[in-house]
Length: 286
Ligand code: PMP
Image 1 (cartoon, rainbow, N blue to C red):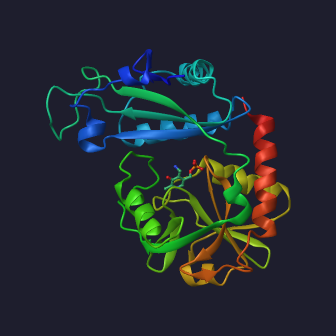
Image 2 (cartoon, rainbow, N blue to C red):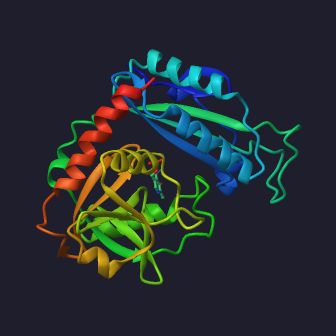
């Protein structure tokens, strides 16, 4: 079955899905995105992703080409046309294709933004990696200062994954002034003496939609949560570590820079949070 992709109002076979070479997403990484996971043919936390998208657009002075209701309809139509039961839906909005390459933003009334969505089928709930956990390296966080905006400029995170791969590991945690900010494409957590510690919100990290839900579930389950910066040293000395993102949910981290975290195996807190997150999100999926 050939994949059907959404481009600016049309549902087309992927080979026919095209945007201009003058698109500012292509020339300037002038665009934002969202990834929403799909379980049992339903969207997980669509509202959270739609709200963050609105915020990313507003921060960059971009306008949404469609309403949130229309976006939901496009997500559903894509799931239907691609018979997607489990995986992700990728959405990207760029500032559109101007007549030429120009650093100055085009007038949004003249140049419409570009909207692209596509599906990615993948088994994300029953992920064997979650049973053994992932191993990470630490690297300098040299990204720009507005990591709270979910832009498509992902070159450094991509390089970070390559550095991890070259070291024979799974991913990288980014550090700034000795403190962990987040993972290349996920939020980072440690557990010490039963307390869940993750960096506070700010411009330094992406405000993860999975992060928000997981912290809420943790608090509801009477777990202690501390939103504050933690050092790489604290992380190496932690009882447990894990990451969260829409496509990995809660994923245990069992090694940081060659040092085993805790027992070097997925810990009880991460395992429990993964179970809670999966069952709660399934219940509220739409
Ligand atoms: N931080 C970064 C840098 C990310 O790229 C992502 C995933 N896109 C996250 C955190 C996790 O966000 P979410 O839970 O909304 O997927």
